[in-house]
Length: 240
Image (cartoon, rainbow, N blue to C red; front, side):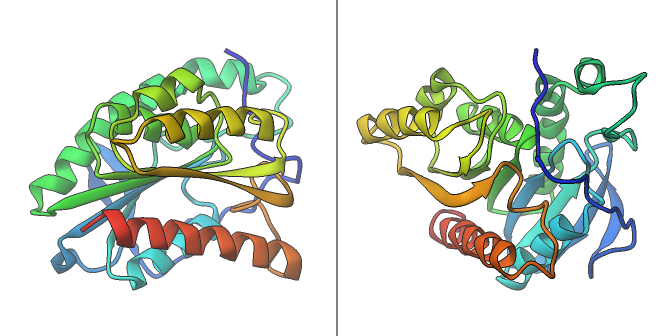
């Protein structure tokens, strides 16, 4: 299994205290939780390999929560996020301990825990590594809607197996899931009349653009905000 290059930029800063939410145990995982439990609508955000403490991810969780959802962001890496530049543990070695197949298995009890709280619908969005986890949830119909953002590991067969509404937000300058592959995803979705879905390629952005940006970079912020709006619109349409 080759490793996903989640960004061509520098790794993100981390802040375990970022965001308006709090940390609690959910489905056996430490989880950042934001929003109102009485909303009855929930969304799961599955991080890239840099983990759930990335400030831009938590800001997005708060944004989704402000739209009326209960949002959970689990630590699928158990405190062992990928650290770039570690010569003793390159990405390929790290992935042996944290493959997306393991993430999918650990996501199941998280979704079950959310549903046990009385939520009537659960959506999920995955970033890079997390997109593979989310597409597996979508294939198993464990969620009501899916959003994949600059996905890694996702195949045409995966998209063909999806059974819930799915939006795929890709990057024009992505080497792992290039526009050509995203176009194949689109062709599959166009042929699946029973599943609502679309593919959108964002111009002039690279893998990881929705999380790996500086808040001082106006163009980067605008591109990320457009993706966030697509994500929110998809959840508003299908998680209800």
